[in-house]
Amino acid sequence: MDARLQRRIQRYGWDKAAPLYERFWQAQLGPARDALFALAALQPGERVLDVACGTGLVTFPAAAAVGPGGRVLATDISDAMVTHLGAEAARRGVTHIEVRRMDAEHLEIETASFDVALCALGLMYVPDPVAALMEQRRVLRRGGRAVAVVWGARSRCGWADIFPIVDSRVQSEVCPMFFQLGTGDQLQQTFAAAGFAAVTARRVDALLHYASAEEACGAAFAGGPVALAYSRFDARTREEAHAEYVASIEPYRRDAAFAIPGEFVVASGT
Image 1 (cartoon, helix red, strand yellow):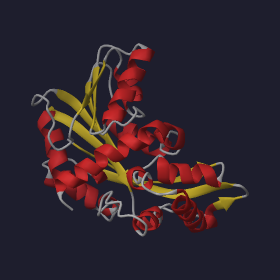
Image 2 (image 1 turned 180 degrees about the vertical axis):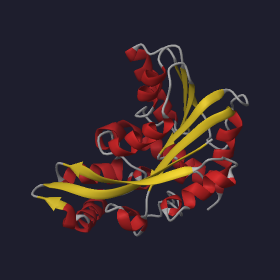
Image 3 (image 1 turned 120 degrees about the vertical axis):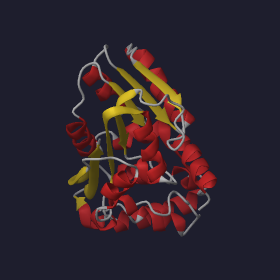
């Protein structure tokens, strides 16, 4: 896919998903955030860059970890995401968070100005992940560290049928290689190709809990990566797509609820 088209799809797709993102994903992504922060080991006073910040599910815990003596710069390609995060930071009175709309592959940031770079579940949407990590490496001081988490192997993510279900109705073009970074040791190799040293990685199993089929569909369609394509569906198409997706996750039903398996890969480098 043309890189400019992919960036545009990400920008406007996440604009669509922003109002529902936290409702459907805050709890479900807890294991990914925990793994990210365990590797990051943030310290009071550190300067942290949060790339692909979304609504701030990583930004606010990072700000709490570094304290008011530190600084967090949160960036995202989506206007709606950064607007939401900026308003929420103001509402909470957190003054050491700065929010800016920015392309992960072209960070408008001074070289060697941060201690830590974080990227939670954003790297797989970037047209050139190596370029994005090279930008993170550029803005880190000598000895600084980067930590990223991505979705794992497709076979380990029980919700993965959402992509062919949507693509069979309208081409989503979310990311043609969505699961690539979570396959084998690809994430570690990407860190190494970007010039990082002491690269480590591990896999994290998780269960995504949804109380009903309606919640599971809300997360998969309206609150997630296919939101832009989903917005083009008419009522009948939505109903058909929902039914097909619910059938795909039927093995994970627990009475009316669902516990859908997922896998994350988290990696760090210095």
